[in-house]
Picture 1: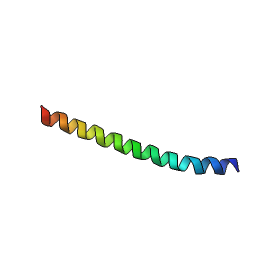
Picture 2: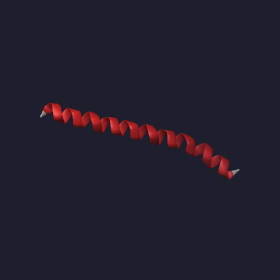
Picture 3: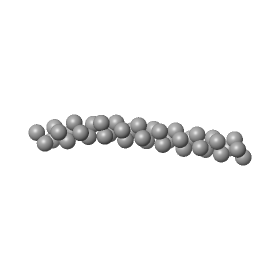
Picture 4: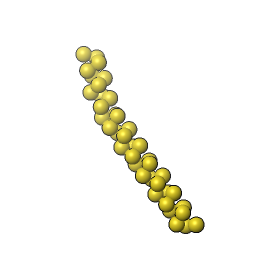
Length: 39
């Protein structure tokens, strides 16, 4: 039972982590493009 609960809790956490990674990578790319345009 405990393993099932851990899997149920970890699923949304993993999804949130993936979204955070995608957002951070997109922000980094936008920042690099902005720096290049500014220069």
